[in-house]
Length: 296
Length: 175
Image (cartoon, rainbow over all chains, first blue to last red; front, side, top):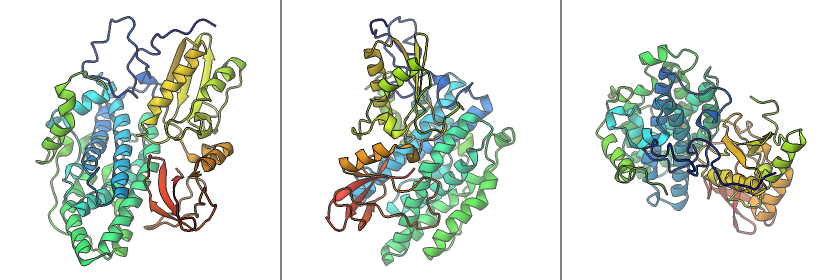
């Protein structure tokens, strides 16, 4: 066996590495750049894993949902009503970042973009997240209402996407669903505590659910892309019933009615967003854009 | 999916790969340094093919930041032992489960002060508020404990307290 050398282990900067800069071309042509690489195409599953254009677009939708929600939840770190909740919301955000990384990594391979390119270098109209996920944190009850809807939707989505004909999406979903199961448990417990707590906490929970409910509908709208991904994507309209059946018993136990009111027309899948996404992206992207290619 | 992919510790059959496996298997979790990646079931395969060595790891949680340290430590250990051409790959399928944790690993966890996962994955009861098996205090072995927070110091743990010895402790959640 020969003397250990310190040459690179793979041709690309690792999917693990947080330091893959925007200009990924700049390392090419340097003979001895130290990159402990995880070969992109070898990640996640065996066999070819570059998504077709349509699959990449679908992965982008789901990845953006998780990324935007994680960024919102991260705000609560050091601000939650108790230390345990600070940690819980931080942990949930971390799981979502993990899902976003896998999904955006997969989405970007088709256009030769990294997960960081997609997260930090797209503009607002290029994001494909649904409006629910970019809704403001509001008070804690608003965050819990958003979390309750999101976790139940994501659980139903991922439990079906785990059976996708696309092996990479199936692998990401099969892993994510186990984590999201804890998220919906967390949200359900808080819905019960707030709704059955004091008059004040109950009033806030009702307001929070009422303010977030208009954005439920968009999650279940079938876009034309879905028609082209039969067997690969989960048809959103098929999740409406199961997601409601998952939420209804909790609302019943919490003695809450289904909120009624206007329905948002959404538009996130086309890149039409509310006034909330721009400031969120500005904060999320400022460091990467101020110091292109920086690593830490 | 490779044969044996859902086996908890798929140690390879050939001697050359076994030797590399046994080296990689010594790498510890940076967050829970008493557990090796083999104890956890995070080490999924080691293949030595001529001069080329390929190691696959699977993350415990999707966002687990310890994966990068484990990957780096595997590279360091194998390169230090003279393996020049080492690639570490990440696989998500089959999804990691606490069922893969070794009995020895669970015993080490308890000695370290962390309650080991109780029960197997996939049997968590459904419903709005779930009941679960009692978690035993790693210090005094009392079953009179309660969950303080379902999310703890790392992705994989919850925070508990013992109502007998009154100490708080971490619990490695079933996943």
